[in-house]
Length: 492
Ligand SMILES: Nc1ncnc2c1ncn2[C@@H]1O[C@H](COP(=O)(O)OP(=O)(O)OP(=O)(O)O)[C@@H](O)[C@H]1O
Image (cartoon, rainbow, N blue to C red; front, side, top):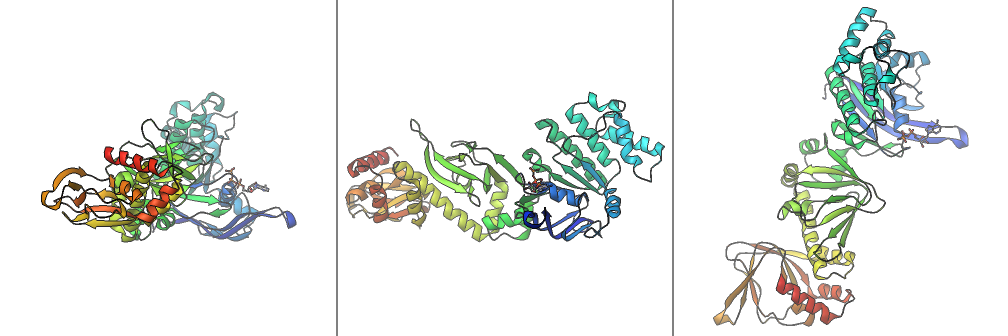
């Protein structure tokens, strides 16, 4: 790709509508390069300036400030004639197909060729037939546009735009008038033909169902180009080497979700990791016979999905788009996620830290359902994760309880009885916790707990003060809390 011809090269481009006091800047400091064969999608909110940028590149407007070079030719300062001349190198596709109703399909396409000086009518006929074959409409040669479906019309428009083998294809919302399947088919077709002909393609679209076809997605926000995905990713998860960044971001899977849509369901198998690029999500914990409980709120730059991937393979919570928000996520498959962990110590540490915090948050919120989630998160984020070697003692029977423990990984053995007559009474595994019931009343531990005989164990530890402050904030009588905790402990 690096040796491919640069088709579009934009530097520090600014564009304004209106004059004097009414002047409004709609594009600011745009820098962009598109090479031959690249399939680039321009996306972004309505009114952000995408169509204006496309029309500047398409030589339908004159450049005000900055540099716009197409095929090496500077267009800032170009004459009208030069702009018209340059347009011969382009194929255009618009929202509705712009076919002339009084011409047949063949005549419509042939017209694009006849506007070019270098084709004889005979050649034009042969090329028209070939491109119609390529778009699957060979049998519609003599049909009039009025007798074609929306998808067929757009395919004719693609044939028209590509029949001249243009160096650059520009498309503004080419799927806007089509249903989901037709829209995708049309863009997939454009993709295939453009690659075969080595054309560069720039598409403006709101249609998220075609984003995966792009070699590169460029975000336009408020007249500026947003961060490229590799920059975005290195902000969220720092420390990757360039090769991994490129692997992860040249063809990112991007999905969008609407207000209150569920992205991840608790209990389902986990196979993906999500980076939140836009919008806000809420995390809910669901228990039988209880309404879902809000345990966390995430916004742009956060990620989710790591708990299921790293702990047991199942989703431990439900992730839902917040009300009135629209969410865009980058989806990372498990295999790539594992590469992330192996590639950057910084990222691994960050993910493990948040994982601990989140596992902790969900267990604490289970134990203390009335406490405000933000307070639980605050305590969980200060808790320490401690590893104990196989067989080592974590708490000792008879000592005054001073901490709350949650097992993150491995198993623990519970012993009762005195030192000379100790009995193994039960086992505790990841996700279970102890120390809570005694903490509230300042009691002594009625058991000894050790790491399992053969493996290390990792536990999260909260000190008494933080734990009790949470209970005080739970708005529930402390005796009730203590008995609920005891009950939960016994059932866990
Ligand atoms: N002729 C014009 N005169 C003044 N302002 C304009 C003109 N055309 C567009 N604008 C403004 O410029 C900004 C960018 O418009 P543009 O059409 O490029 O956005 P867009 O990202 O393509 O939006 P959409 O996705 O809704 O088509 C908008 O605020 C728009 O209102």
